[in-house]
Length: 277
Image (cartoon, rainbow, N blue to C red; front, side, top):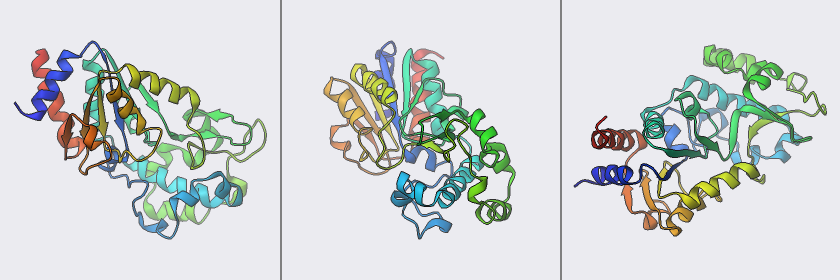
């Protein structure tokens, strides 16, 4: 029996139990989104760990917003891939299933995911670091029309560079209606804590899960990387899907050295056969 078949059998045996997927940048990289630590041309001279901080935002909010708008532009052009869709299929086929993601791109939402937790926030939302007010995507788009997904999607790269990279000024940045501070993207920056309620829920899910998938994550960023470890410590089965080995590999019951788009659809297909669907 192949590893794919064995995993499908495990899903069938545990279909009424809690199961979760922890996903990282590798999942969205296959949609054409550069990984956070990847090189995307224009920004090679900047270190993401220096730009994605509150200190950098206070010192130069225009530069930080230009960088995030560039990332949002790339994401707006991207589409969910077969890996995203396979995870949605698992949600539809299983009882208590969760997708816990480190990604901020929202592609899981666009794929149709309903049961998800965003550990590191969402790039399409806004957050005021001065008064802690959060803005959902619809609210934030009204506050900052340049961050509108549909607007960005329609721009050519030349238009984006002219209108955004060359034209953005501090006076056009979004201001918080509550306190007047400049609103930043709704993501977790370096040095910031994860949203406490989201982390609490993720830990609860990991603790009671019988099966866990680690998909496209390097498993070096904590506390996210602790979730599969916690599942394993509580007697759960760990399935890793990643082209390269990670610190989780020695703990994994099954390791697939391939991409999510290669492996997950096969697992779903086999699982559907077993369920007679």
